[in-house]
Length: 362
Image (tube, rainbow, N blue to C red; front, side):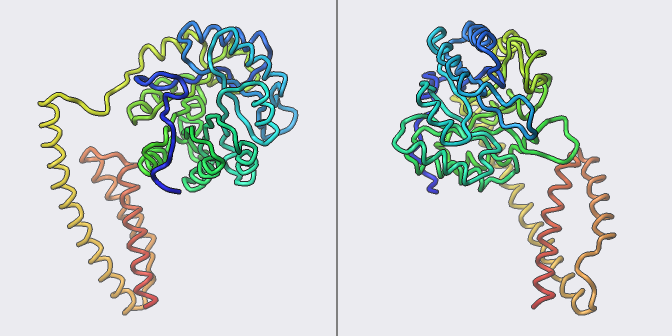
């Protein structure tokens, strides 16, 4: 996949060049009155908001609410006619694509579970050949950047020019305040690899609750993401799916009014000069870090040779645990977070073990 993708500008979705694209609506289209009432309340906030609603809901277990099906597409048509908002829904196979095109859906999105399957994505891509419609692609459930990129490639090769990636977080086994781990590094890496590819954030699925949505929404904008997909329901407490993560229209309006959209650059001369000074300092510090890292790796290599000469195993678990505990303690005294120190030293330790393994086998 080339880094210079021919991707249309993100404002093609909403028509607004100066602000993030907002996509909002219920997790599921449950009935016509719920869909229309929610849409009309959102349209009063801003008619340029794109209305979303799940028509087909992929559920892990049977007998759960799996969406209204194709009947719900007629409700979305009414939303479009009565509010003027653009409409979007999720597709998981070729039949879904065909039904959406028949009903004038403006934008399609591919969900996280579908992105996990190259076969499913290719089926959707084949159904889209020769069609000019924007497609949004959520990250896979697992933190696999290549799988996400592969899905984007397949849709692009089908001839779709207007593609958006949606960061909705990744499944995690560990304890977390979030339903899905944000793991911003993966989304940032995608943006750096493909600068013309718009990246949105789905705070609802990252958070899993409404309390954290404002924090993640602002964080996403601060990370220079191009839009937000936020679930909104006229009566969240009665929702048939994901009730805990859906805002009311009033809460959505309050959230949007408080979000701060920052500029990527500033023309303030004092700011520019001070930033250049600070970045120069960063460069000097980075040079020193690299010199120290080189020295540390040189010492690790010497340790590897010494272990080989004395027939000692590479991995010294007790030593590693002791070292990590000590470095975390020292780092915290210096104001560094435990997570930062852990990740930093794990990378160094993995490289040291790999280096010593090569010495053992040489």
